[in-house]
Image (cartoon, rainbow, N blue to C red):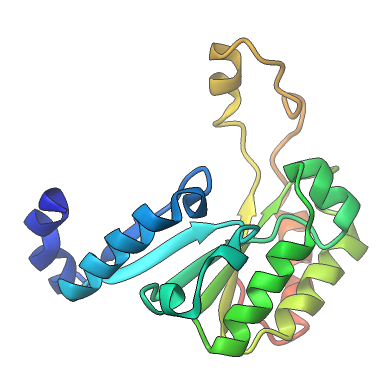
Length: 187
């Protein structure tokens, strides 16, 4: 907190804030919530970047210390979601619905990976789900890139997406259009 306090005034003036991301920040829930509480005491905007799968660990009071939820929904198809994350999809959807019911602001982030998450029906499921979220402010389409490839190589691991190219502008626009067709603000 000493480091955050040094920058608190600049963050307030610039309309910035503190984002806790991960891995998965909810794995260290007590730590993250304590940071958020103290940031709120300093008048700072707070944000969590999460997959939401551990959202049931968060109380409504915990959620009140978070001004914005960046929620990664990596697929609308449970099989593809589990292939991508090795986790079930349902806890993420439950967390999003809970945030919506509580009126907690969120941005959904959808990683567009050609040959994996770009299927028309898969995108339709995510877009339809997002359209029903009352507190959703926007969806960000995050185009896949190869910047993480070196990390895998440094760890001596086989990178499963080594041959995947970034999505084309046409594919990206098609996916954005699927969300826009439901009245969702898309970036």
